[in-house]
Amino acid sequence: MDTQSYLPVQPGVGMEENFLSLDDILLSQERLPARTECAFPRLGFLEKSTDNPDIVEGTKMELPLWLSKGLYDRKRRVLSVELPKVYREGWRTVFNADPNVVDLHKMGPYYYGLGSQMLHFDCPENTEIGQTLLQTFIGRFRRNMDSSQNAYNEDTSALVERLDTLEKALFRSGQSGLNSFQSWEKGQASQITASALVLNYRKRKITDMQQ
Image (tube, rainbow, N blue to C red; front, top):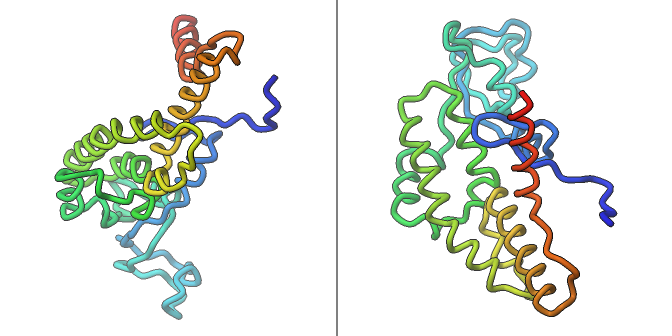
């Protein structure tokens, strides 16, 4: 019997958030470098570096993701958002060369999630960013899953401290599957049950068929 008081909700995939997910709520607080394209009267108190009562046009600020998305408008040009350094060309070159050498947690615990959200903003480098995100995930996936399958009953803290949030979730899934298999192999499990990923996929298929 499951005794958890809170059943974790999986984060959204790609550019769509799931605000029942704690990971997506935390992701929405990530701060982005931004520049105002118009004046914001009587909001100067939000900018600690000036005594001006207004936020003047051209002010550079760091705003949370949720606010940046809310203010961003392609037509009105209220706000322009700059790329965080980890998604710029210099770092993309590093990721494309060997993604396994990068400490993704140190660079930002929501590397894949925030990178996907950056595609909301018009940027000429969006295609390259999307390709780097995909290739980085592919390049690190096999090593991460191999590690999760070869660390039975071991301290895995050193293995996961360099992973981003999505990779840590996959690592835990791999560990859970390994532990379940080991228990079954030793005769300590009465039956093999479908994983949560399979069950959720079936639920989505049923929902799609009913619509």
